[in-house]
Length: 243
Image (cartoon, rainbow, N blue to C red; front, side, top):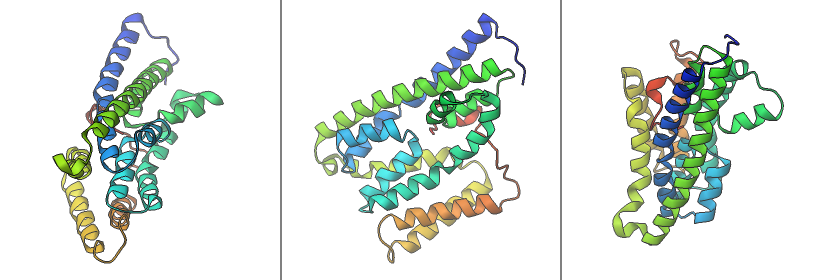
C-alpha cells in the first residue's frame, strides 16, 4: 500500500464512482422503510433502526422475524448472525485505512459491503480512505433519508394486507438472495437452508427457522475449504446489493 498522494483526476474519479454507489444503494432504504412499517414497527422505530444498526440485510432480517410473529430477541439474533461478516471486513480494512482512536470508531459505523469494496481495491492509503469514506457516508445519509420517506409512505397506506404489502418482507429477502445464487455451492446452501427452515416451522416458535437456516449457511462457510475468511465483496457485489 503506497502513501503517494492522489492527483486531482484520480480523486474526482473515486468520488464520482463512490457517490454513484451511494445513490444506487441508498435508494433501497425506501423499500426498507415501507417493509418495516408494514411489519408493525412505528416510523420512529424504523428510523432509529436505520440510524443505529445501519446494516441493510440485518435490518430486513430483524423486521422479517418480527413480521412473522417472532420475538424481538430472535430477530436481533438473526440480525447479529448476518452482521458477523462485517467483523471480517474490519479485520481486512483496519490495516489499510490506518486510522486510530475516534476515527476508527466512526469508520466502524459505515463499514458495509459497499464501502469495503470501494476502499479495498485502491493502491494508496489516500485512495482507500477516500473511496471508503465517500461511499460509506453517502450510503448512510441517503439510506436514512430514504428510510424515513418509505416509512411515512408505508404508514399512509394503512393496513398492509389491503395491497398485499404483508408479502413485501419475503420479497425483499428474495431480492437480496437472488444475486448471490451464482454458483452451485450457493444454490446448494440456499436449498439446504430452505429445507431446514421449512422443517423447523411446524415445531419451533416464529423466528427460530430463520436462525436455523442462517446456521446452515454459517456451517458451510466454516467447513468450506474454498472460502477465504478475509474475503471482501468485489465490484460486482456493490450497487444494489446492500450491505
